[in-house]
Length: 237
Image (cartoon, helix red, strand yellow):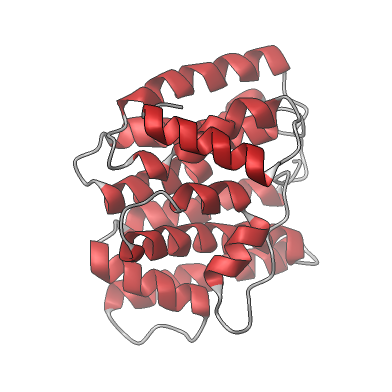
């Protein structure tokens, strides 16, 4: 399998999750800036930082067994959060624990993010079906969690479609997929994402960059910011 077409930054030793996210995952960091309220923005950063930590596990490990151990470490961290015991002293684990407590996030969805990463331990190229399942499990699940923070009344399937579209856009030129079939899947999900409420929209605003990423356009901070701003103002990706 081809790994994600971007490299996340190593965790900041001082716990500056927002700074690390802005460097390693600028699309979703920019998207999170449009969330209403500092608490909500911090929550989105915690969710994306957790997802990026999981994404690092297969890439940073020397063997699949070591990667499995890294993913198991994060599953244990979720169990600590679920049990209410003191969570391990890791900036992402601490931020995620605070966010789960603040917003009563579904820990099953957080476990789904871990489960999705096991496909990355397989060296076989992805089929289109596997790629779409991976996109739903990663970007789609993160978007569902973000929507739950921003507007619990938002349709979770619409939110998941927006997050998955962003992931698909990044995979089209890097995972050996059929461009035509993947583009159709991307368009379907972007249409479904139109059901996201205005309040939850910052949780999927990065999907507005999906078509540009699918065409291989390099990230441009100013251009991306303008695209996201237009999408937020229009309320659609």
